[in-house]
Length: 327
Image (cartoon, rainbow, N blue to C red; front, side, top):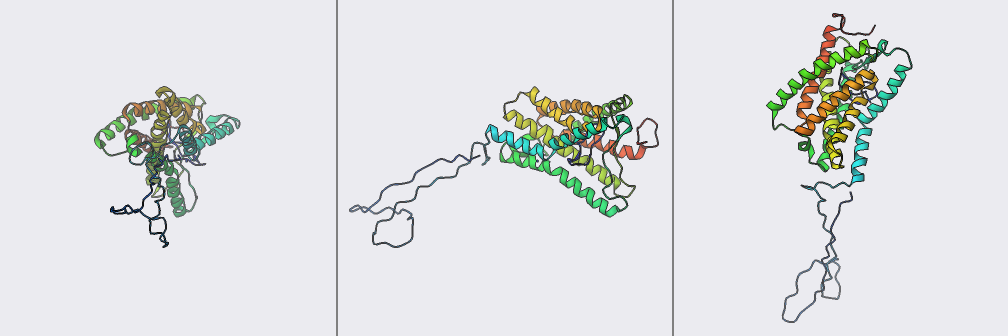
């Protein structure tokens, strides 16, 4: 779900709502020149254009060429400390901060009574009774929440290979779409079953995917929310983070555990069920990325899972007895 203070997540996906010195090489270019009988004087760029009585050209100033740091196509090289700082700053303005808010909200929920009787609203109205203002705020919120994904791609472009390093491209659209759809079918049904089990056991809040008013833009905004959730989470948590942790020398298992725990952390506001279910999803999605090196299928799967959860809730809430709704 998009980062921010207000939670925007799906049943099984989405976060709690809330981001060198360049080594140069000294290369001296100095030397003395002067008139030599019978030989032409080499032309050397002067330091100053001011005329002097000395007809000899002044020595050229030493130059320090700016060369690209280690990497390709002018990418900046980052040391270990630079990578660590970059990771913490990006998570601090995105899903890492969402995890902190989710933890605080969970503590508030468990200290307020049985969590099953409390509601985790994922997509609520920002301006009740004022649909056009509400729409403007919804769109601004979606834009704000997807910026960390663009920031992650930008940072990877400076060092790490850019969007292609995480498979965020259109090289295999057919295969990515097919694999993502199959993954969504497998994970979506399992996630719904796990949520219902957690809710009946009292370990989860009642998740309400939509509290938007019944206006013409409700479904488009919910679909936009699903897409934003998918892009932000998969680019930052599955793609960027796993690439950077590998650069830091972390083993695949250790990096996978960190990525999965981060994914679970910003769903903790839904309860222990939301946390554990998303840790499991994080292990699966992270492992797929480590093996295939592409986030596009994960984005497709995540978008489909959230879209079905959001729109399905609007269509089914109050019409079927098995779907928990706010009392």
